[in-house]
Length: 252
Image 1 (spheres, helix red, strand yellow):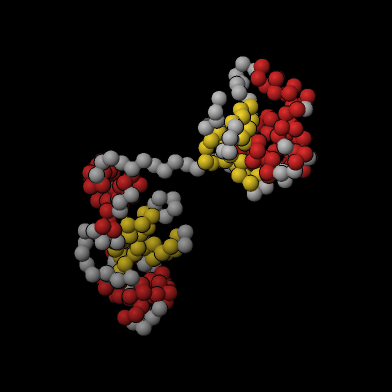
Image 2: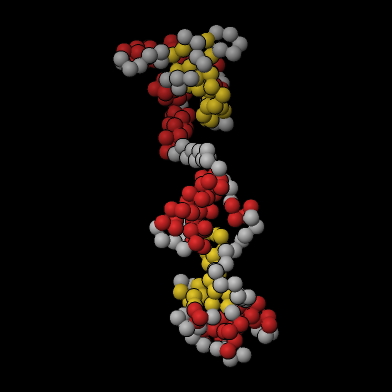
């Protein structure tokens, strides 16, 4: 039987060991990896009684077939099962045997890369509408539903609908002109940090988990925007802006 050689193999001692279509390894490549000494040629290995006994034992197993396959010619070679690879490496030296064992152990320990999700066959717009409808059914408001729909559409199709529409923020239904603490601070020659402190001192906001959040008193003057982005947990990232009415509550 002629082995069908695959292009991918394993690497031992900076040498690629070719693998055929049924998982046998090229002993000629292994000979190169071991140093290519004449006394370690695969032909000498197969003349050993120990090798012949092992090969006979392997071939006697009902689930095992063709433990060794040799193809003549310029591009030919001898392909053997993993057990014979180990036996050959042990015949070479203890050092090379250990190197082979560790290489195979590393292959087993390394998980295969996860397959990329298959793109949805449905158009991004239809995916967005479908997810938005479900989000509304489970009680999310329009902004939260739009954010969820955008994230779901991006995951399924790779298309970010909000970016396509150049909408990096989703405003609440109230369309007052609002300002960030940085913008408020600039109006009064203060830093964002100073203005945040003024808001906190007036009881209008408080820090929760490292983020400024409007208090019950501050909600009358605050507007929360969804940014279209999400934390690592999947929760939407929100930004707080303030109406001009807040100026009557802070000591400038």
